[in-house]
Length: 256
Image 1 (cartoon, rainbow, N blue to C red):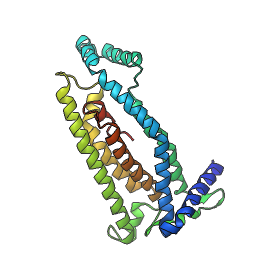
Image 2: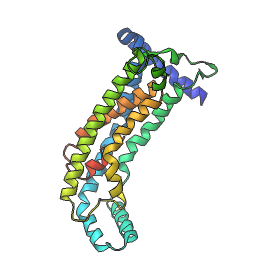
Image 3: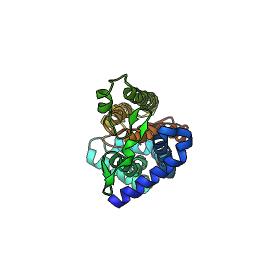
Image 4: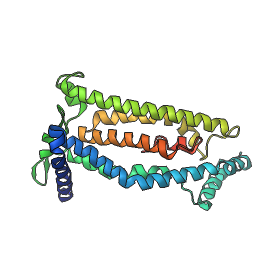
């Protein structure tokens, strides 16, 4: 594992060296943003496949409504019938999770890379890099202890929080609009395409705001990955689901 971490550190360091003439002291932060964009480009085919799957699920709504009527008094049979329908149509109810799952290794690599004081038995030089005044290995709590909320480090985090809040608000409004349209189009008493999804859809519009807690508690380098990735996701979903006003678009709105 340490050897792999060393290779990954060298990769990020090489990208930072290439960006040094443009970004100077914040070259490593820029390298993390660029690395995140590369990861998202690699995952993009999965995101497109996920969008196709979600659209296919949306087309099953009339059939699922019929199953709900048929098995209204037997939730277990309803669940089995819905899952069987998905299998027959080759549609995965969890297809929207794949892009997020494939990004987790990159996030955890950055998390560990900027959390360890040493790599391969040597001092971790990456911890010396900063985004403006804030160390990439530091956390919001460190910034609060060095100048407070409006100190030089605190202002960096305020900027990240502002970006996350803007993206989360965009996702919230879009998801609420889609879910309202889905509820209006659904048959009476139909709580969602998948049994048990009704309760989840009530909290889904707020899930994007959970990113604020992630940014506050992880090292700044990992926070940069999260902010870049969530911003990418918001734009990507707006494009991929632009022709899907109902149901599945809302279910996918907080994925990734």
